[in-house]
Length: 251
Ligand code: SAM
Image (cartoon, rainbow, N blue to C red):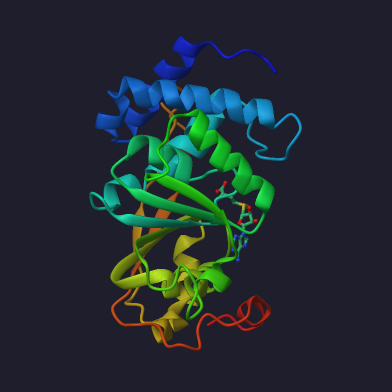
């Protein structure tokens, strides 16, 4: 693994956060150092485990860290948060480092990724009260009697499924009054059109928040958006359906 210069890394990270309106994070030296440590750890483990195809430090900063942290401004202090399909820890690990006031549960159906996220959180000094990772399928945890059912203020999720599928995984896990925040790319508006059937789960109409991400050195802009869906009523007990059904006949 090519060594990464810590000062170059943290300077670029601070510029990227500042450029994208995250001023308090840019001034948080301990957050910058922790994200440097996370990068080293992720790239080391990535030598023998498939965690990320993004390997250049500046790309990791923009596409994993700044991208993950776009949700932070939309989460109230002390909220309970579920990250569905956390994979290598996005957005949950940067979010836990930036917002230690949160109580994040990260789930993934792949056990070894969950083990990596748990061990990494512990190495980075993240308290289990801030982040706990569990190997679990969202539709199992969110079913009636499941450990995730109607337990969370916020659900976040990135790169897991089309919004119409993600909605059925996420909405049963939210308390009434809670919000799904889906991190999406250029097709966010199109996905919202296709996901209007989510209202049967107790969802209000989806809102689109464009959050274009600008690289501080090149000025290149990546299309990125948050789709916010509030839960205004309890989810009927028949949802979520079995995963094969959800995928075969999305709402
Ligand atoms: N969120 C991470 C990111 O943005 O880098 C990982 C994205 S990865 C493409 C999708 C992850 O979702 C995989 O790790 C997969 O195991 C997990 N996943 C897919 N369906 C799931 C489900 N129904 N419940 C829990 N995890 C799921």
